[in-house]
Image (cartoon, rainbow, N blue to C red):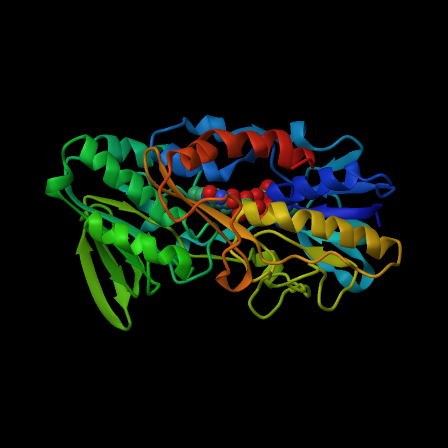
Length: 394
Ligand SMILES: Cc1cc2nc3c(=O)[nH]c(=O)nc-3n(C[C@H](O)[C@H](O)[C@H](O)COP(=O)(O)OP(=O)(O)OC[C@H]3O[C@@H](n4cnc5c(N)ncnc54)[C@H](O)[C@@H]3O)c2cc1C
């Protein structure tokens, strides 16, 4: 084995960096910690909604990964290819085997662009946009800025996705923008979703449903996007076995997503493909020295950075307890938050735990659209992310 560390972290995204920083801030940090992460860059993905809406340039969402690897942590700039949990090691593409006493797995979610016929070829052209790609996110705004009316479609796939609110946030921004530039009366705005409602958590679904009516959004539920023909400007959906073709002038696609393939094929995956962990302790259900959090984990919460903010201290507490052979006391309650941008200067702050139970932070009705919550999203949260969360302090 080429190297061994007390703790190895797979993935240096939101979860990996937050956990590493928190581990190193502990009074007695592990004796050696490594992060295996291939990317030079780190992205604050929640900003991409606002980039697509023309509020920020996309470069504001990106920093050098090296600036966030905590002091004392070794960065192995490589990718993990396979896991050998019975032998306490992972295999990497360039650095051979890496051993560990405890492993924390957080390589994020995989975007399955290829599952929608024609999408890869036309993304970023012909009015076809997606905020789910850094490379194309600025094109969303380029299309919206020049929009001259017609059909604007916003899709939602039939798989778990990161940030379940993002597919509609860009719709609300676009709808507001169409009003501002005077093309709303010549525009039909469609929310075409594989799901059966506007939002999965009933507490917030109700006020959002009211906005759908007020702002004349045409909903097309149980519609799963299957094909995009950019040149002909046609989107083909499956509606419970029936083919439905819609013309578009602009379409924002939220692509299907799944666990990364190397996780799916590995012994640490559950049948669903996600890393198989206990929903409260984040510890693997079979391999007790393996933990997982974030988008790649089987935690049955909403896949968001906000959820990771609450999962990270639990994982750190439990990894430390495991290493010291103590009982695991940290317990995650499923908390996730979704700042539902409902227009420029308007936001409904959804916060909920397992089972969709509201877990709100503020002493006012968070189901109302508020300018203060827009400021939280545009100013407060990005600062909190870069200066607090990624430093293990928030
Ligand atoms: C458009 C959009 C809007 C969003 N809005 C919000 C929001 O408003 N609020 C919110 O809380 N969240 C939001 N999110 C979701 C949030 O960004 C993610 O949930 C969060 O970043 C997931 O963190 P993660 O660490 O699990 O994965 P990531 O941050 O994606 O990091 C995964 C890391 O693993 C690395 N990796 C991948 N494969 C390997 C491998 N084989 N070996 C080693 N490393 C590997 C990757 O390079 C990457 O750095 C949004 C996301 C998007 C795309």
